[in-house]
Image 1 (spheres, rainbow, N blue to C red):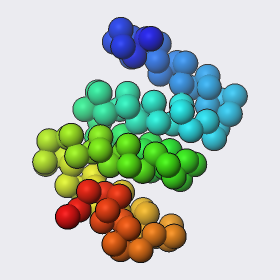
Image 2: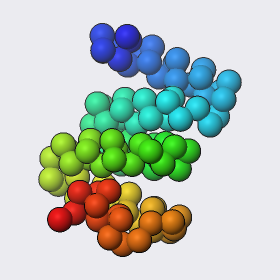
Image 3: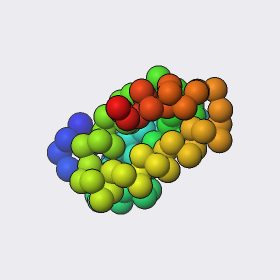
Image 4: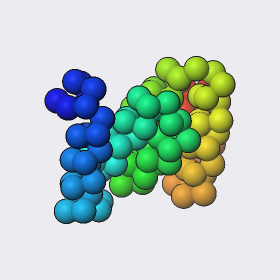
Length: 104
């Protein structure tokens, strides 16, 4: 609710509290990325999105969709950073990465 209302300070405080309680809380990490994204901190957002995907791989398609909505100047390096992180983690073929990241 606080994010919708634009109360970023409250959202950040709630996310910090959630992560202190459970440092692996995927939803809190994902929302932290959303807050960073909303504030234009794309580099920070990508780092948090990568953390969220590491904890919950099913978020990959959602994160890819979000990154494709960014301006091209931010989206291209963000998608490359995400791809590099996923390649180093392994488990997906290059073709699977292309499909997940929206590469034709």
